[in-house]
Length: 85
Image (cartoon, rainbow, N blue to C red; front, side):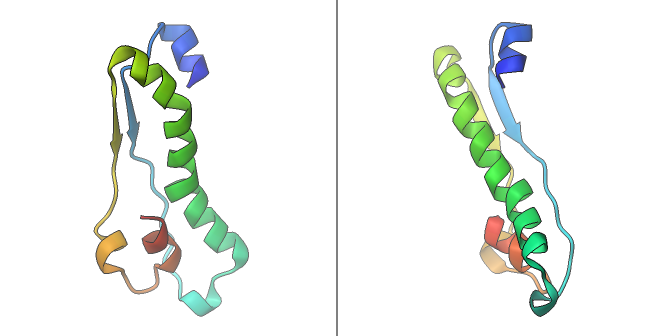
């Protein structure tokens, strides 16, 4: 975020649209599988929002977080993804 502001002079919008989803049964998920799901789908957007908010407050900008219905309804073989969404 700071590199973007340094290069372009301001920040007007943050769009969190990245996602990661690897289908696997919950009992076969490793700790690393769980961490990867949460890192991309939950932790990454949180850190980006936290870094962007001070700049967006200055410009009156906005944040767009793209989620998934999987966070509400759940999906088979997608425990980490659904929890993060």
